[in-house]
Length: 301
Image (cartoon, rainbow, N blue to C red; front, side, top):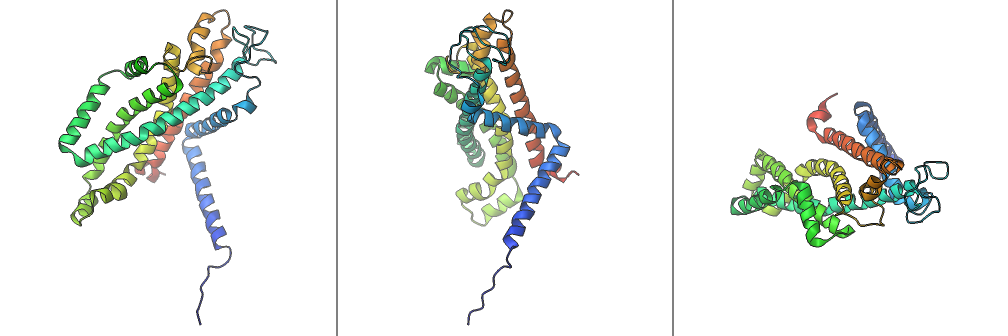
């Protein structure tokens, strides 16, 4: 006779409900303590939805030339039209898709080499650390925008070339931060104890170091997401980014916007406002995430 012990029915449901209430409680606590962070989260969700569903959100095609050129904002065109009769609001919405795509892909592509270089440099040290850090110092001697322009002069303009340039720049910056975080954890007693018990380097890295620098990775790249979007807009504004007619917030602020700054200022209003709000929201959300993951901040209140 085999005695089977089963959990009472509804236990899983109650556990899920408790977990849900826990997350909702944390979200409510964060919204109460960090209202700007909550505002940033809402704006980011709207930004992502607008970018993903741009075809449904935008009232017109971003490339459609209309008969009413340089029309002021009206019920037909809420943000006006440009010199080609294209709806400005529609181009801003599709520009959000461009910014989201560049931001997400460049952030992910930069995260992996940054973590690998930073962790390995701090963990192994010696001549390997010296060579990596001198390479990083050499690259960081150039201002970020100058480095990006230099890469794009070599590669040429284009969506993927912009992503490659941004990924390289963010990987260099992020590797220095990852190295510092790894160095701080590497000196902890439990790391030395694990090493003394015969733990392999791979186990130390995967089991102890990587999980402990995960909060740093999340914070650095949540804040860096806004930097990537702003950098892409800056490159497009200077003529080194995504070439027209692909909608880009920076491109809309470039030659088209500057040429009609006084005659049709609404061509600048929408992309400028969208860029400012999204960058502000990303930074506020990143600050809130940093405080949420900081043990000292979690213990407060």
